[in-house]
Amino acid sequence: MKHNSENWLLKVEGLTKIYGTANANSIAKTGPELDTNICPETGSIVACADINFELYPGEVLGIVGESGSGKSTIVKMLYFDLEQTSGTVLFNKAPYVGKNILEQTSRTKRQIRNHLMGMVYQNPRDGLNFKFTSGGNIAEKLIMAGNYHVGNIREKATDLLHKTEVPTLRLDDLPAHFSGGMQQRVQISKAISNQPPLLFLDEVTTGLDVSVQAKVLDLIRVLQQELGVAMIVVSHDLSVIRMLTDRTLVMKNGRIVEKGLTDQILQDPQHPYTQLLVSSIL
Image (tube, rainbow, N blue to C red):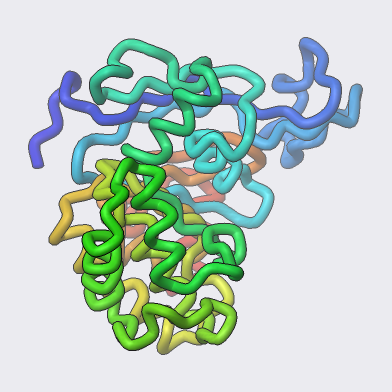
């Protein structure tokens, strides 16, 4: 897909999240060069600072880094699970064009989330309601996106479970009775049910058996090709990033230390930290 500077889907500028009381030096006194994200003056934690990137329609962007690098914080702010400290996020979809979506009312944020976004969390309990059946979970997202016809919802839920390789006989089973891999599939079904142009995947294979991981990643890749949905994939695992993404941001101590085409970063990493990450998987 050809990217020109105008056809972006999402533009992130100066996105910052600080926990605790920060002062003017909190950002300057933290970061990869200083190997910490804790401000020595105030004790505040700079989860991420001055994050800038663009995402294009249908593109898969990876964010990779060790635990605590700030990568999950970014998608949680973009999905409105976390409040930002500062920053601008522009979403190139009517009626939100030209508006900082982070500054909208909670009602508008809910609309954006229900109609234009999907999220698959590391822990299925964060993305699924374990009191609802697998079909009920998908129905919940469809209803929020404005679909109310029960027959259509059931049909759609059955179709989505089939697509994500969950036996459709299990439509009325509770996710608590499913394996971890199966719970992730139901979560993926729910996340794509409103056909969003943007999907966030936060460490979706962590905690799954290796053979199950491979199947879930295969499924994500197939769905991405079929649906043409743009994705932001967060992982500490470079093999996940290699398999799914077109471009990658590498994070350390709350900052982006390197960005570029995934193949380029894996073959010729420039930053010492990226070199360390790449050499650890070879």
